Image 1 (cartoon, rainbow, N blue to C red):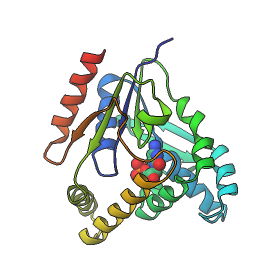
Image 2: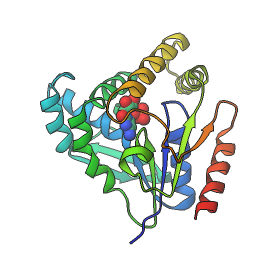
Image 3: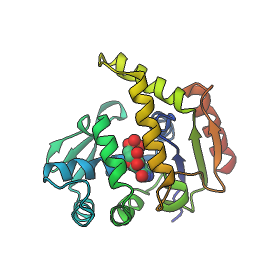
Image 4: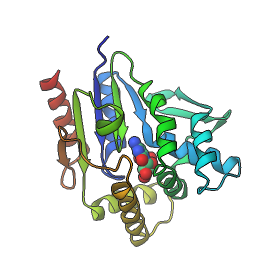
Length: 223
Ligand code: C5P
């Protein structure tokens, strides 16, 4: 059977997460948050005392991730790792940094490949990540690449943290985003880049609603 897939790739802070959640709600399609799998690998490794340099063990952790994605209220997905809820715990900056280190390891990426493909199911899938259109779902009918300037992405992240009542430094966030971009775009395996057939959208000057409208419009045309 043919399963329609929309891939959404781009750097962190490009608005991918929000756009993918809204697309999945509006279309009633499944959602793959592939970054969560790399984050979960990092968290599980920490639980088991495995250093982020031990590729051999990290591969085993990735291959045997005991994780459940539970649909909760308001289309929020609850993430349970080894029986423990980690929905918020995987979202810290520290885990994001570890995730980008394990994500540069070929055997970790290989170990997570089939698990990601298994998310494809009717009526359709929204796939959020870095290599969804290039590697994981090269056959997707619509590929979107969301971008925004590093400054704009840092400012979005800053506002998000402040609105949650957390303290944050705009300068540190910008440095962190630049370091993560550098790692994600320059690694030898599955680097972050648009698929040749991707629709590229610079969201620096766009609202969430505007981005959503463009993507839904593209989806209609390619439907
Ligand atoms: O998107 P998110 O910030 O949750 O991803 C965390 C890290 O996982 C990214 O910085 C990136 O290094 C890695 N990642 C990846 N490929 C994906 C999704 C995420 O390499 N498809």
